[in-house]
Image (cartoon, rainbow over all chains, first blue to last red; front, side, top):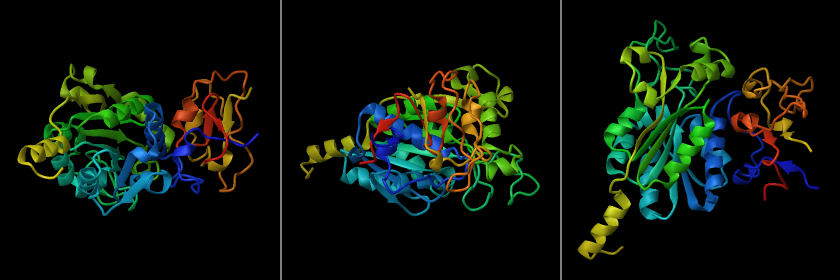
Length: 276
Length: 78
């Protein structure tokens, strides 16, 4: 009998023996949620093009997944992915990158891709800090948190990325923490099938940087925090905003169908007699 | 029949990570005393009698180091 392997190993590059993440990092849980979604949908890696930017979570597609991947410049994966989708409209284009990459330096690409409603899936891995560079304040860092660039506490308010993408016009927006990987898998499946701009905001633990500065410490403590403070959007809608302080609102923020860019452009080309 | 299959070389240690022990509803994971190639302490195989094969450890393991019965497949990557 040949040696047993992990069921999702078949989607990973054979030369990869270990993930590239720190011990306890949630990016591995998100990788598994993504691969399980692909597995359950019955798709193969040939159906996908993965695009990532710069950061810890951008290392999910590039060394791990046995598919066509683009590891692009900082903040620009959505711009590259838009081009890939225009050129290869039959492929599922999936962007996997971090909060610093997609919402800080690449914020404009994110909101304009959502506004255009181009058919792609964005998995925004939000750890609330710049983890790779050593724990600086990011736009998603909670108010008051002491980091190495805010030694007296963060004076800025944090970014609500899901609300931003809903307002910008995304077709499918959901937020889950790494304590809810089953729900995350379900949302990723919906997002891949969605014709339009779909974003999953995956809140993840960064025990090395965020855990250290927030005094939460280990990955297990951070998961406990998600367990205690995670709250479904349906329940949160009935609550007063003051009660939601420190809570993580999770669930599907929007799930709707509206005209998608690639099909709109194709229709335009047919109407004007241009080459398809 | 073995329910939980461990891949200790992929593990990043129960001291630093320990997510398997946290998510197991029956707390069946205990650290081994043997280091793996990277110097981490992976978990020992859990008690098969008590395991219900709920699959939590497989879904939460960030390092693809645990597979649960029905999930693990024979053969290499190709």
